[in-house]
Image (cartoon, rainbow, N blue to C red; front, side, top):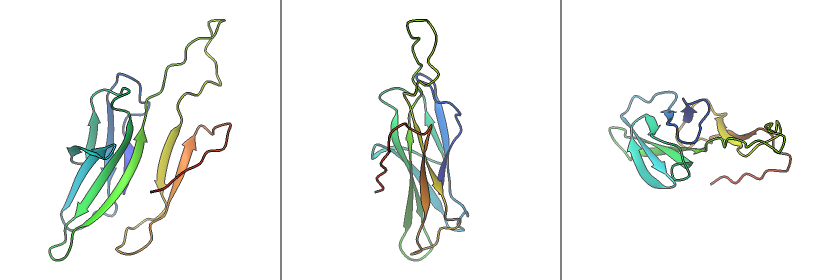
Length: 140
């Protein structure tokens, strides 16, 4: 399961779109639910944020609930932090600093190709651009 951003460069005041993808697609019914900072946001594959700002930027989770005909429903989560790029202000010379980084992009890249019941799932956390200081990641 992955969250794929459809908006290339999220900017403050602009809309943002992303899709939740489940591969391979199970043969059972799947319900996709979006959560923002742990609270219900919307239903469906597409995440639509009307306007990115300090109130709408943050951690979004797509939860897939797979319901087999018999047995207990299975839930899978994918989380993606969504932040907008701050526009750098010019320095005293009126030029924009090329080393200015107010925003870092964190992505979770799935390493496991197939999701299987009771099998381990592997993913890698990446940050861009590489910060000049050590970064610590916490998975939960």
